[in-house]
Image (cartoon, rainbow, N blue to C red; front, side):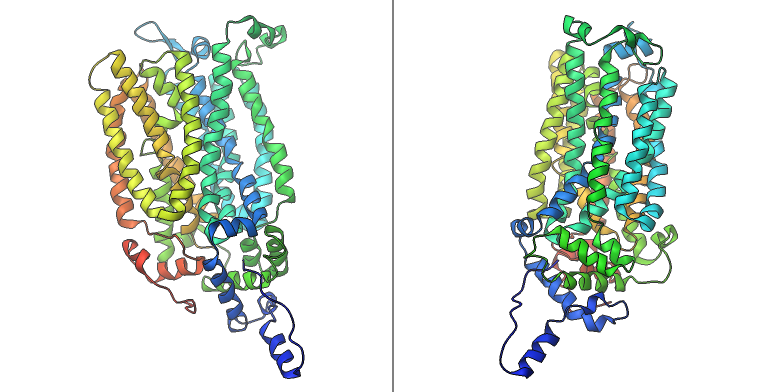
Length: 560
């Protein structure tokens, strides 16, 4: 993506005209048989233009790139919505009365084993989704792979809607998890590939904002139905026909939130059908002319006058990774790609070990901390709203302070609050202790979205090699789910009154695992702020230590 240049042809001397024509012939990058030397200068010009482009200028010149990244990021709402929905269901009194058992105090609770099963069904399916997403995307592109996932989700929601037992709900989550895996593997890669370098951070961090938005929708819907459950208005929207055994409950408190999932897939599929494919993916496939057209759709006409230069820049970068073989999972564990894959897997997995599960189970955590039902749902809604605000603040911090800085030190701050949560849970049962635990739980949930969570999406998108990106993001998310599943069981048993009932003392556990993640991040995660894709490739090949990346200078002419 390059800046516009003066294309006025010089008049007079024929020699000057010929020299101008030679100098401004930017078609070499579209010639499939051209050698890198013939389009290297165009590639350098395009890369230099990106270095010189500010954040606001990038938004002004490439508004459509920002819009399409926004739309692709929206796909994560589906996973977020369902994850938080299951967390809200197990906290609902009526859901617990219908499907739960009495604990030692005579209070209905969903058994810890079933509560865990309902929450791991989606991740189990998503492991399948992320594993098939890489090969499918490498073959048919980001757009069509995502559209396929959206159509599958439309069908699988029916299973959830008509489920009338915990077992069938588990199956529905397993099925819905497959398209989730496709979305989460493709979205960060696509977003990072269609925007200029200066917009990579905010474009990928939008994923965290939409994760929070999914939680806000769930929180709002469940809060309304929980607070109005016994009112006359509730009975008005609860017609007799829903007493059928095909529905999972006798009221709309579960049916309506489930049905709302259908409002996302079809509109998104239509929008993605008209969206441009990633020009990087097109260049990888040798479809250079189509890549130039895609670039022209991402920015203003004045900004894409020389999009052939941008294609040349992409070719130059991809040529550094070039091989005749199709990308394969085996390559992720070879050479410097092994280090890059481990970073992506580690950053993804660490999301489960630094208090994120408290955020995902916020309403249930508040209930177990001694907060009454209606206030717990209200706090859950407030938490989600604050998360969305803090994600937007993180755009500024990550853009100007860097990815490594925000991720590493944000993780350490999170550890401190988790330990404080453990202390609050150790002082005994009292109203003050309950409020302290609820407050610290809210701070942990919100603080996570200011530092580690949004920065992790940028690191994940930037670390992988362009050629292997669909596979790397897929296997990285698989690592997330592999760690997520046992952590869900652990978290549930720590909080559930039919388990060990630790309450706020779970902060000690997550604080310990979070500290380990902080140390590993400090040692191994490099700073990629302000680096082009070519520079990142070169620095990984040179095996530059993570803490030296910020000071390392890569010459614009270097190819290796």
